[in-house]
Length: 161
Image 1 (cartoon, rainbow, N blue to C red):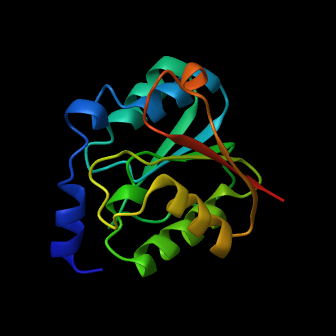
Image 2 (image 1 turned 180 degrees about the vertical axis):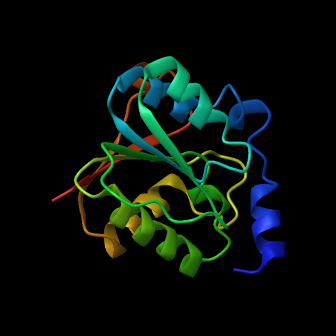
């Protein structure tokens, strides 16, 4: 991918608001992981805000991965993508991102969110879930309740066969 496209995507910036320290999905992940877990923040952004916070608060082995970074290897207990699916600019990019998440998930857990803004593809939650179900081999796409996650942003667990 060209550097200008990488810069544009990364400038959707995780440094403030619901994508900074207040982001719901990383907070949920923080509540369920513990020491020794191997965790991947897919789409961590150049500052790796949540990678550092999760390492310090949970004792987990947390890695970050984003565009332009070397692809991580090995098995993860949990992979999460916070504010990633909503910034995909085409169905092809969305499909490629989902394929990469599926691969990196391995036998671990996978959590994604789908904030209301921005939604560059304009897909509703139902359309996104339907699309994921039609192209990816997950056996279940489970929407987590607000009471469980503590956030109004939709969070999904994607479960492999």
